[in-house]
Image (cartoon, rainbow, N blue to C red; front, side, top):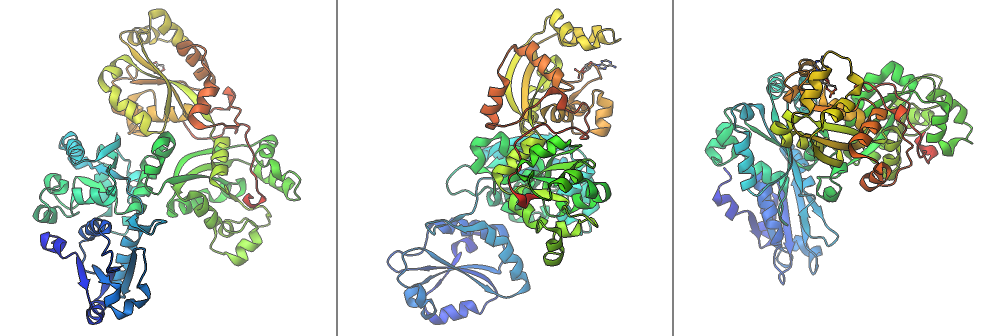
Length: 589
Ligand code: CMP
């Protein structure tokens, strides 16, 4: 459909009033470049328009150029120096959809030059059908040959519930269940790709490269596209691409919530720059309506990057709310905050801070109920309480501080065991980076028998101890210090349970589920708590200045991590938050 003929006639030339009126009598969205005779129409926008047109392939979207002097209706645009683009919508139901899809792709810069609003990267998935057919490597090669850069490549098997969350916008469709089953049926490759180069916008470039959703149409109209080459039917269409920037941003946060934190230098290259904010669900509502609140959070498009239920002491509440201690409401606040567990959540989304605060509504519950009955604070207000039940950070800076308060940056010791290092080094390191860990120190080392015995001294006397020591010194291991908020627990979650049989059931995407051969040869090692982490780090790496490396990697922080603060299980439950910088504004309450 979008053949050469259309590309040539991309922009209609309107050269008189009559033609102008005639053009406006057709249905749809018309984007008119109103230009001055002395400079001519804007050339840089044309390739973008062509992409959008090819992308949407819809006749309701038209582009035109019109010289301001030759059309009476354009009188007020005459003599302007800056480019002027008019978006003229001639109402029609289909048009409304068109506007929503096209508008976010366009933005004005300060100089009023029309450019893609963000053009850096998008999420791509090589789906289970293509992976199962052994085509992943071939597809990855083609992606690179086409000039895309792969910033992350994570092989993972989605659980049904992940697939459901991921495709929640398609929940009403007939094939939804089939789609969920297919997407969770085996491993896929989730990639972050970018298209380097000034003019390129990764989202439409990738969509163009994969071709139409329907494989039959792809085969007819874009035989060179990935879907035409690797797809077999509509559902089994080999690859996925985000529809637009917003979706790319959501999908990025969904699969790689820490991507931004771990790739600070490429921050500006992330679609829409997903942001983090801290949300707290206070005890009363947490007790009675936790699932409803979490559902509202997901419905609003947030991804939950981290969560932790904590029982706060009075002193910790005081540290968090230090600026509020003189306020009348403070005793009631402390009472509420220490009356049971609080759920702390790090929420991720584009403009997460303001979006979450807007959803919360007014601080004062009475005001929230009367003036913003749909706000979350109004909906989730307990009877007879003066303290609202939901907290949100006020600024991005404050959000980072508050997130660090509840999820302090930690270090843990990680090891890739000898056989896994030989067989899966690259994949494991990719998963570590994709999960947002900073590798603060790394060294390949062959443990001597004595070192292996010392390293695993806690297991001395257990039936498998000798085997374990033999196994660990049969070749080099890769020893690493991994740093991240809640690193101990996060690394344990990424590793999965010690026994791969259990890992396959409860954490199918974990490293041990994927790569471990047995409970002994279980791929990776990780410290079980912060105090072990400190000991083993010192044993392997000697005395190193971890505080300095935290600051270098994450910026200055006021945290006072103590080994006892860390949770000892893989579950995200009861841990006391450590001390930290406190909240600033009464607004937040
Ligand atoms: P790791 O997390 O390194 O901690 C101790 C290691 O002992 C463990 O991974 C396994 O490699 C090994 N291990 C634990 N339980 C058993 C078991 N029941 N049989 C054999 N090896 C085990």
